[in-house]
Length: 308
Image: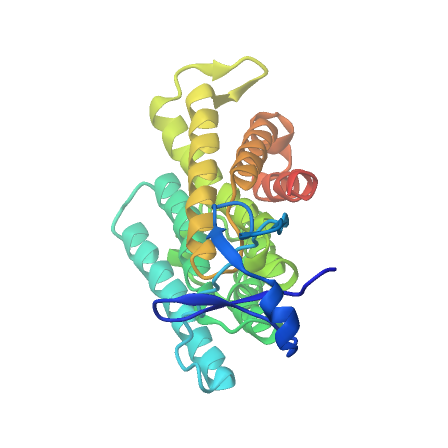
């Protein structure tokens, strides 16, 4: 005869509760001891037999509420989050525009823009509500910059300081390549993957931290070149793998604290595979001909789809 036992926990004591009311049935069960372990459910020992529950206990993940600005009014909260996130991105752009004006090395300045904007923007994601509205409103921030890159790149508007901070040679038409690919990638990641997918973490971290640090480190410590591409250095590739991987793991723990993803050793290994693959593709001669702001995200997307 199978009995449906429920266990009720109180402030300091516990006891078995029987969902049937027959006193004769209850009197037949005389538990001698109850034992627990960290893996299996309780084991009830009776005078005549031992009743075991062999199913594993599932620990439900405790989701931490999103860091919404106004939890009681999600619509207004999302609008405020958009304003705050946009303000953070704009402040960073203004900062790097000023450093460009003050004579900071143009290539270094460009890579500092490249590294900081996407990572800082991703830090703001928990302020948005869950669902499509939060994702779409967040995507407006890089989405507006798509229009900005087009307007500046086509010469419709003039902004020499911004062009200087984002281009290699100060040519506004360069904004129609790497910088445009950069903001378009982040926009699409917001819309289609958002903060619940490890692919979005791997893609942005390898694009921003990985590719950005690869150039900075490679220019300073890259005396040893890669045999199949003299424009790339071993130090730069190692820096790209390290920065992309460490940033990915860091954001995994960050989003895991809000309950958006569930961090695991398997996910960490997946981030390492994606970072290695992205660095390998970035080191190929094809990344010189096709902008690495396009090849790195595509590689992260394809490999991430396989390992996650």
